[in-house]
Length: 184
Image (tube, rainbow, N blue to C red):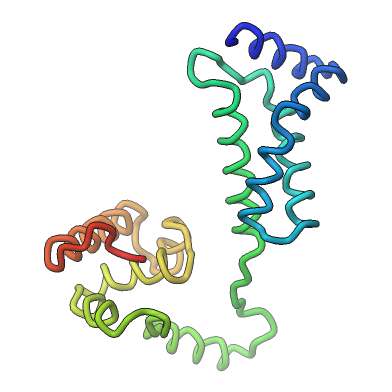
């Protein structure tokens, strides 16, 4: 099967229309189902599936059957495309249009960002027991959806420090409370 997959992807990389159709016939339903499950809106899932196949076509020459089965590679690209789409969809407040005084107020208040109310009182207490740096990093990454790089930029901490604070905070929650999966 690996040789067939490799030949198919070589043909896709050469823009062979029949190969692209064959690839779509093999994986279209699987990719679409994954997109629909994640996005839950039919039109968005269709757009996402199309984006996935465009990405597969653009990177077809990178497929290596020694590293992964074709289905695994296709689903990895699907997952990456969905993550990118979800990140782009996420709406975050901006400082655009605010007077300097208003922006400073928002910045001052955001340094004391509340823990989301959908957390159990027990989890809120556990997070409050963490050192401030660890608590802030965990809240921003897990509850507000920021990337580690974004947290680094927001807090002014080096990226390595943010990664360490996240790791130490999660380990502390696991050690203190026996939480296998510290957040969630």
